[in-house]
Amino acid sequence: MNKKIVLWMGLVVSLVFGNVANAQLTIDIKQGVDNPTSIAVVPFDWQGSGILPEDVSRIVNADLRLSGQFAPVPAQDMLSFPKSPQDITYRDWRVLGTEYVVTGRIQPQAGGNYLLSFELVSVLDQRQVFTTKQVTGGQNQLRDLAHYVSDQVYEAITGIRGAFSTQMIYIQAERDQRGVDTFYLMLSDADGARPRQLRRSSKPMMSPMWSPDGQKVAYVSFETGRSAIFIERIDGSDRQQITNFKGINGSPAWSPDGSKLALVLSKDGNPEIYIMDLVTRKLTRMTRHFAIDTEPNWMPDGKSIVFTSDRGGRPQIYQLTLATGQVDRLTFDGDYNARPRVSPDGKTLVMVHRSQGVFHIATMDINTGYLRVLTETRLDESPSVAPNGAMLMYATKRGDKGILAAVSLDAGVKYRLPSQRGDVREPAWSPFFN
Image 1 (tube, rainbow, N blue to C red):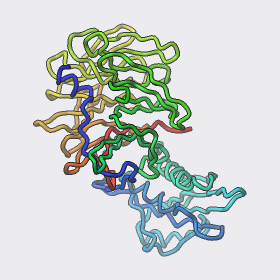
Image 2 (image 1 turned 180 degrees about the vertical axis):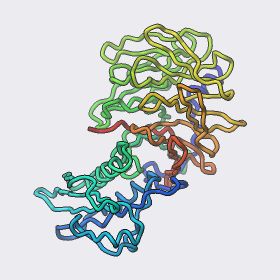
Image 3 (image 1 turned 90 degrees about the horizontal axis):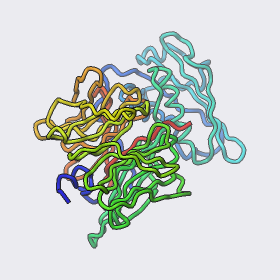
Image 4 (image 1 turned 120 degrees about the horizontal axis):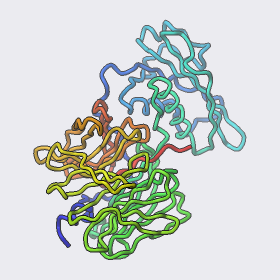
């Protein structure tokens, strides 16, 4: 097989192995926006007995800080601890320069459940930004309740839907003392917490992609001795192999309505873009070119696909209109642009861009062609955009170790999610969950 094809398709796994596959990712914030909004998340009032297994207000603080747009007030600096808006003494918060205050209460419910009530208050206006909101959850859902609070607060202040309640899938690898490699398909909260194993294999896995409804994941596995595409339900109740062709079977990408997969096959001799109807399993070949066509991704309206091709001599990103078959080149800045992803509003193209021999993550305004490099690390790859379009996750290197990192689409916010042990790659950010 042509070496160039192998590298393009991601069929060579360049992982540096650690020794634990389910180690939690930790957060290392590198950069936030200038003049972040000062907000106080007052420790929530627990109205039950004993100690809660999770500190909900601490998780909300961490979420808001992680966005880079907020500067939470440390609890030790608070002059008072109001349990509700009626208890707030506004001068206490004006002295600290606080712009918003979050108050909350947690009550025990039957069956070990919890009821969380919370409010957001503007110190400047001395008013509630929204009336009391309530959410309930079970014994193991305190983190989910906290992320819900963060989402509501974030959206109320920024006008952008919060994505703290979303999740992330990624590939992690382990090498034992005998030098034997094991690969893991992992699921975690968007902040790296609560990692759990979805699939374990002695063969490489790669290219995970969430279904639009957040119930399934498509990915590539080499467990059959060659690349094959599988679809697996997140709850583990069903798993199907959907391709078994000779050659390359790679780069699965769900259509916006979840009824089709765009994928790359070389069964006819050259890597081309195909679309598979997931009900009938009918394949439709979409590209016919002697060059390498790979890494398809759908535009949000489902009417076209962006993909990587070297048909112009170097890897660049093209757009294929499905109704007409017309192919248009999108990227011209630089000699290498690949792994296209599109923002939820369809306005911004996210890609791997090579600059002076170094691979970075970049964005391009699809209408104007303006390109902006977002990252400064080396060997950045595999970008995945958050469903609210505010951030993207990508894989990079820290020394010789593969880690995940995130950056906002305006490059104002940056953080890393290195694994405590092990090596991680190929993040895929989930859609919103209803």
